[in-house]
Amino acid sequence: MLSDYVKGEYLTVNFGLNSIPVVETSSAAGMLASIARQHIRTVIGNGETTFLWFDIWHPKSPLLNTYGHHTVAQFRSHLDAEVNEFISNDIWCWPAHRRTTKVEDLIDSIPDSLIPNPNLGDQVVWDCDNTGKYSLKSAILLLKEPSPKIL
Image (tube, one colour):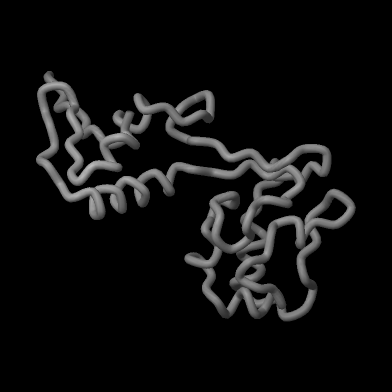
């Protein structure tokens, strides 16, 4: 299991005939975590377990990286705000004050299909697999360089 490799002093990942040289786990683990983080999405249900500014749930997420601390202040929000703080009566409830271009862009870029559902919890999904579930195979395929095409 990949986690068993990461726990060791070194990490070696073998992709068939091609293997990645031995790398220190601290840097390899950091690299793997960074790559994996980009492919973990949250499907909003009630918004109670998803961080508004840090989690990947919006097309332009993480919102803090896209819009910055100034927009957090414009929303009169805080960094550990959860998505449910902007849902009221099962619909999005965005602040009406201080509508800057960035705030308008954030609100306007929410797809119509992204509708909160108070009866469902938020779901974390792995976007590298059609099932939405993480598998070691999908992670390896993500890391593996594509083979050259033979014409």
